[in-house]
Length: 139
Image (cartoon, rainbow, N blue to C red; front, side):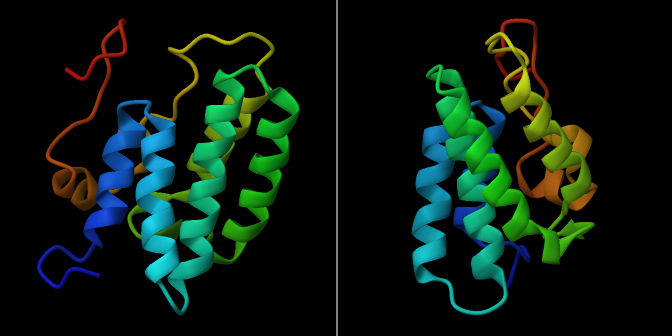
């Protein structure tokens, strides 16, 4: 963890990628962090990896894999509920579930809006207000 921000830089990097709907890049950032982490945060980071890969699978029309990864990630995240490292985990995992279980693939709905689930401090550390326009581009 970075002493000046309170958050590990690769955690923030993964959240930035997530807010851009780049679930593969989010997975890559969190996987590098997970590999280097020992202790209580390790399982939490693994749960985020599984959420990101689940949404990536959904985008690639692999719904069964997406639901399976959501379920595994949720189980790993439960010990950290209701809030951990600036994330409202109840809202986060509810949104991931809604995304992986939706019948059709619409990239505008295949997201979990960080504004709705992140603490004000975490939003500030991410560089402001990561909201999306109709096209999915950050505003």
